[in-house]
Structures are given as structure tokens and as C-alpha cells.
Length: 409
Image 1 (cartoon, rainbow, N blue to C red):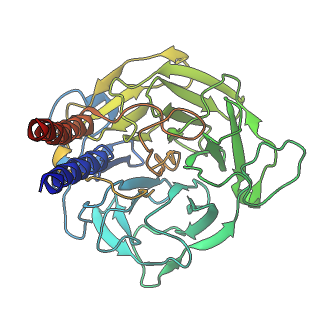
Image 2: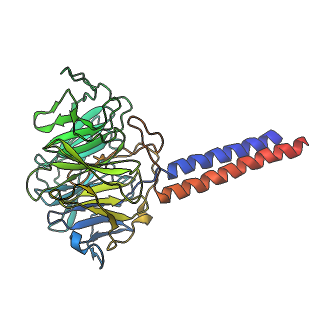
Image 3: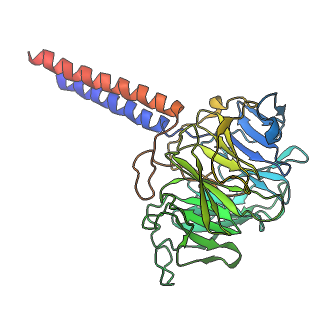
């Protein structure tokens, strides 16, 4: 009887610790994006969607409610949004647990939703990171060591023909600078951080790649450059999130990389191969998502807060202050608890997150600091839940040990 009691207490403590671990992996099921006029759009905020307007209005006022029929339920962890700049449409991935592979399309001009069906083939819609290329309007996703693509054409509303995910190649993520391509090299265990700039996908946080370097996939030639590219400042080679800064016209030339520990914000310019070091976000949250316009980097935290860092590519060289987008309500009630590897936003940041505004990123593990593992702790919301459950589990285990001592006496 004694051992049965102790066993039950130990199992209960273990289950509670497991619950805490899952809660600590909470990620936003809401997402934000920009339209082509750089209005900040917020989707899945307590069952509502909002237009917060342009950056100069975020400090006060009330957002415009743009909630309408046909929207996704935003009930899945790690929902991500992507701006198609040519069509002024927002593509939403991983926002519907009943239809995990579907892509929801929000026409920001008509303010209407449609749902695009896809065929997945070997692609796993529950475990990937992705970017949306600016010029081709094609999604490129990394999943289980493979690179896939899905061509959105110029869709601003869904059509009746499913769009296929196509297998592109096994990328070579090795540090080999000799020019020899080895498909699939160094992909084992890699949690992708993908950033988009100049129609190139930049893979960050690869084990064995020096700090300040990235492996590059050239989209227009479907070619993985054998040698890593250096970007000056040695930003850490670790897991994080990424988001590409748009231009009013033309392809993105810069992307932001935020390590999971939130220690800094690195802005990488792929034209000059240089890196600026800006302030890290005030809220240190490895599961936050990031999105960018032409002049702001926006953070959506796991507790539902929306913050931003103002950025001018011509004058911002360092520092900066993160501020709250007080115009938006908190999205806290729409957060989910991740129990799987998570799906695209990155990014990713593509992270990583460097797609058209953001990119999905497979979630960090919230432990470790070397190579491609997560460095840093989870956000305040998930951390509080985790600590509460762990404490209760510890109390129950301690009670069992105390009971053993009493009975032995």
C-alpha cells in the first residue's frame, strides 16, 4: 500500500511537470501582418480581427473591427500571416486545426476571406518553417530536412483547384567552402530559421556555421550556395526569429534576426553584407512572432501583447526603444499550448521569420544555448504557468517522501 501511494504521487508529479512543459511552449494562435499601405492588421484577437492603422496612430485610439465571415478560427498554435505585396492579400497558415493544410486568404482591398485547398504530398503541414518570396509569390518551406515550394500565383481569392506542395531539394547546410554540394548535409536536428532578402533564403542558426554567417538558397536558380555568406558583425549562430523589412517597391534588402534570448535585434543588409545591432525586445519571449513593414519591427508575444521597434534603414544604426501598440487589445485568450514541433512563423523567421512580413519558424525547445537550440526562457505568461505546475508536482513528490519517512518511523 505504501509503495502504491508513493507511486501514485510520483506519477501525478511527473504528469504535472509534463503539463508545465507543454504550457511553457505556448505560442500565439493569433497573428499580425501589414497591408500594402502599411496598416497593421491583427487577426485572431479574442475572436476578432482589427485594423490598427499606420504606425503614427498606434499609441492611442481604437482599432477598426474588420471581422467578417469566412475567416479561420485561429485555434492552432503558431498561426502565421504573410503579405503578398503584388496582390494586397494576406495568406494565413496553420490557423485551423480541422484543416491544417488549408491556406486562408484575406483580400485586404475587398476585406473578404476565402479558403484555398492544397495537396501536401510528402510535405508535413504540422512541422515546417516557411517564407513567402516577394517576386515569385511562392512559399518555400523547410520540413524534416527537405525544401518544398507552393506557388500562390497572383491569388487574392481562392480558386477551386488545389495547389500542390512540391519537393524542391534536400538543402546542403554544411560549412563546406570548397564548392562541393552535399544534398541533406547537416540537416539532422536542425530547427529552421529562415529569412528572406533579395529573393534569397537565408538559413540561420546552423550548427557548425560561424557566428555572423548564413547559408543561402537562391530562389530564381533553385540553387543552394555551397559556401556560407558572412555579414560582418558576429550575430549568434543560434535559434531565433526573423522578419524581412519591406520596401515601398522592390524586393526586401534587409531582415531582422532576434535570438531566442532576446538579447539584441540584428538587422542584416544583404546588399552591403553588413549587420546593425539594435535593442532587443523588452519582452524576452522565444515563442514570440515578428513581422515588419518598411519602418517598424512588430512583436506578438505569447501573452498576447503587441510591441514594436521603429526603424529607418537610412538613419537607424543602433539602439532604439521598443514600445507597446496600445491601440490593440491583448490577444491573450487566443493563445494555444504547443505539444508538437509547431508550424510555419519562423520563422522564423521564417522565422525564422523572413517572409513577406514574417516567416514561420518551428518552435524552440526552451532549453540549451549552443548550436541551433533555443537560448532563453519562455514568456512571462507561459513561464508563470510552468512554474505553478512544477511547484505543485514538487509538493506532491515531497509529500510522498515525507509519508515514507513517517511510516518508516
